[in-house]
Image (cartoon, rainbow, N blue to C red; front, top):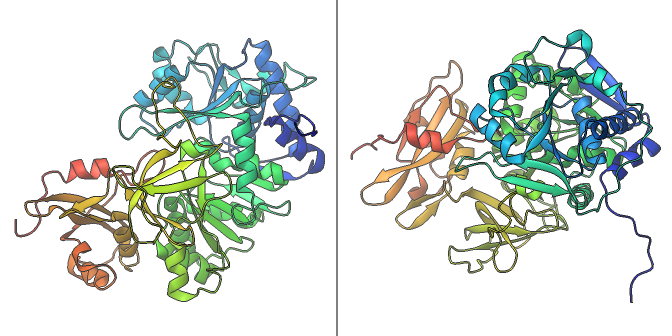
Length: 542
């Protein structure tokens, strides 16, 4: 016997239809790449997305064909997400922070046929377009007045190209399991891997993250996603915000502390999301100027571990609640969110902040387990490390063009590559990437925990920990520190600060000072580069 409910496929266009119908005038504010502040609404975004879908079909874009974007967070990029999928095509967000060779490889591997690009990236595309024979047209996300002279193939200004369609169009009818979006992993080891999202997976994921214990967006919220739309499915905010009818503030290309502060206060932002390096810049700006945060209620921090001092700074100095989140491109991307349960709601002081450094518990639609290297389940005691594995309807089951290569275990779980603990209340805490964990005398040492503690030292701006060779213990931790400007600090004072906060055998064997720590294209510490930089390093006494 089947249920007697209506057949209502989960297609992405239903989200923008809902926003335009029930929240038509909710503001969408962007800092345009050209400079000025631009204001629009969900009603206008939907109408222009319909024009875009219509224009793409006139351009000859076929169902399932990939249309690439190389763009910042603006209203044009947002309407491209809906217009491309509304034409039954696949929106491929390309990360411009990757190396040029990787960008070309990704575009060719995805077989992109059109490219929508911001003005910022015209020189980059001009430099690599001869390596992109499959891209038949470049559409520059600007108007005729700002259109640069360019050698890009069949280049056209977006606004004039879009004006050739009137928007009298019906969204393409597609199966809810049809491909809708595409993003590539950053490829720190080997070639980047293509993750393909479906209409169904994106709608389900947006519903899951709007759970009250997770993003929990409301119509009265004004959301500023500083995390780029090209990073891990935009953390699903382009779907979850209009689904809730929340206002949007899109910062464009300017993500320095002063520019973000201007938008946060000027546009009444209530919730914002980004990686820790972004918030480090904002906090430095606030400290230097004596600024305040007048409307901000919540900050979501993910992408890499959030240091406790950052959480304390937002909460104690500025009255803003911080939520730690974790996810991956392969998870659409949110996997966990650190919100309070009844079992933890009474925590305060150090105990509360000890919880807040964890990545949290998963929403419905995400299941987790930790195992040893042999695949045996590990206990949820908050202390035993294991390989973190996940499954769910918005978790990748295969990579693009590698469908025959199994990436799931026998129970259908995806190995995230992270090493984590899970406690009795279901809170997950990442202790390392499996390739970064330090194995000393057969035991594992968490580099992330040492880094977060070191960031609490008043003279430390940034910290990283890597393993270096040791003749007896195999590896020992080396703490690498970027000191704050004009700070007087030495290794002994930092080690003294760590003393008593971690196990004795976790204590770094030495501290090295650098002017800068390298980061990946997604803002994470690039430990492969650090290991290469310190490959000849010898610990004291060896």
